[in-house]
Amino acid sequence: VGKTMLKTFHEVFPVNSAQKLFILLEKIVPDLILLDINMPEMDGYEAISILQADERFRDIPVIFLTSNVDENSELRGLSMGAVDYVYKPFSTSLLLRRIDSHLLIASQRQKLKQYNENLEDLVAEKTHQLIKLRDTILGVVAEVVEYRDDVTGGHVSRTTYFFRLLMEHLIQEGIYSEETANWDKNLLVASTQLHDVGKVAIPDAILKKPGKLTEEEFETMKTHTQIGVDLIDDIEKDVGNEQSFLMYAKLIAGTHHEKWDGSGYPLGLSGEFIPLEGRVMALADVYDALISQRPYKNSMPTEDAKSIILAGRGTHFDPILVDVFESISDKFAAFIQS
Image (cartoon, rainbow, N blue to C red):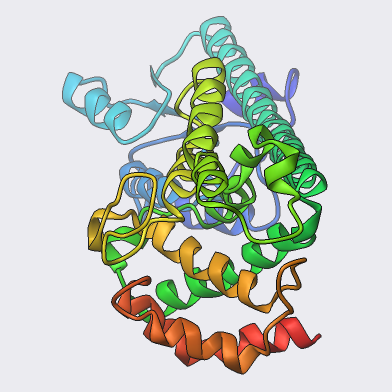
């Protein structure tokens, strides 16, 4: 009766057992399943359990169409994932209305799923664009700093590379694992480009001086760390402090001139009171300064620069980071020589 009635409105594939249902499902995925409970070999409850366990079929709406009219059977069927429960003998018009309703719901659910998938793709694309824009802006700001401080051309790109080398080795070897566990590596590396952003406020006469700075000039130069922190603070206030790359940038800008023994600036922090991000940047920054040409000095061979870094173990630099540097110093030298 059901088949005859439904054929007028739908394409129908009748089978007389659950086993045959699953054979059919390998060839045809229907929009809806009408399922009896009392069937030979496998009952409807076992059949719906198998349907729900298979990701290919779990979203197909199932209506129990059965002569089991007791409340417990209905509750069990609905709790196992059926969308409806219809008693036999059934009303033709009512069954058709229920089928149409559930087909409409399933269709809308599928459209919503597709919309969400498209939305996820759109969000991912927009996020990628924003990240690209952020990194471009960071790069431009870094270039502005380097343009003003033209005696240190290429400093930002080199220190960023050195920082990444140290960071990746720390993570790979599980060194300072508690601190690095929460690092967003891409954001952290991108933020290193702002480590000298405070130099935009240093007078040209000091920033571009072709010789050693006087004590007073050096005190002015040292202010670039706090100026950098203040500039990044201002950005945070405008865009919100949820931007973690700004947090990284502020830590690095403010602490990359601190020294392990407390003799650095601007705060005179020592040991592990210096954020790990700042300690890593300090080593990368000094190494680059050593191997770079300056108006007041020649570039230093990489082996000599390595010796000075090793000599700063426990005074200028974190001893553990110096050990890390020593183990990968050939990669630093190779980058300079490439």
